[in-house]
Image 1 (tube, rainbow, N blue to C red):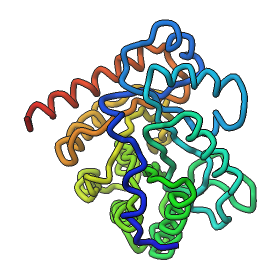
Image 2: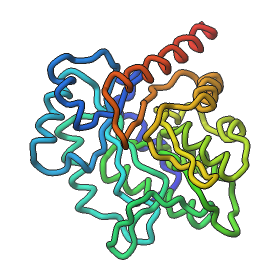
Image 3: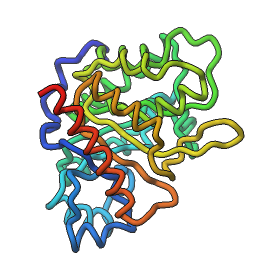
Amino acid sequence: MNSNSSSQHNSPLQSSIISGVGVGLRTPHYPEFISSRPDVAWLEVHSENYFGEGPGVVMLEKIRADYPISLHGVGLSLGSADVLDDHHLKQLQQLITRISPSLVSEHLCWGALGGRHLNDLIPMPYSKAALNLMCERVDEVQEFLGQRILIENVSSYLRWQNEELSEWDFVATLARRTGCGLLLDVNNIYVSSINHDFDAREYLAAMPADNVLEIHLAGYETQQGCLIDTHSRPVCAEVWQLYREAIQMIGAKPTLIEWDSDIPPLETLLAEAAIAKNILEQEHAQFV
């Protein structure tokens, strides 16, 4: 695979369809989105939950009639030493054809080895060899799907030994070499910056703004002095401030409120989305 193929996958994503602030669509909130069509700009779902046939994907098709959809994968394990799972890719391709999402994303991580899947997103070692592998895998996925994908930075709690690159240089170089989009998770940047004592603003400043096509915001928990990205709490004040600075640096980007554990009433997610929308509008007004 060619790791300098940025021109090959720039057009198929209909990213202009998505703007403003969306929320993650979760099963408890299906009825409200069907019956009352809450005022939210777009929705994101985990791709693997809708592979194959079943009531979930039928429900998603109904909701898709009223909202743009972003597909967010959690199981492809791009950075694994295993070869990519062709069956997984075929199922993703079928879902893309069925749903016509505006964005398709995956994680900068690995989570499977020898055909066995771990229940976590394991960060990559930030080495030149790992960077080459990730570039090859991203190229392979984009070639298979015939479109550009977004790659999300993950949170981390331990560091690999003998790292050759900073995480932000790794992410930025991956985007430039493959032409992939970036899904910038601001909460993950904050969590990792506290756990590993680096400057989150240096991370933001290194991001190629044109490649950032989506932002995630979520809440974390603290366990034994370590910040854990649980997606189970409101966005904290420090992450809201970092989000504001991210918009100042890279411009207004489609933004998602993620909440995957201890799922609250939909009103709670919509209230978080309203805060993000207010920040987007305030920062946009400064540059108009």
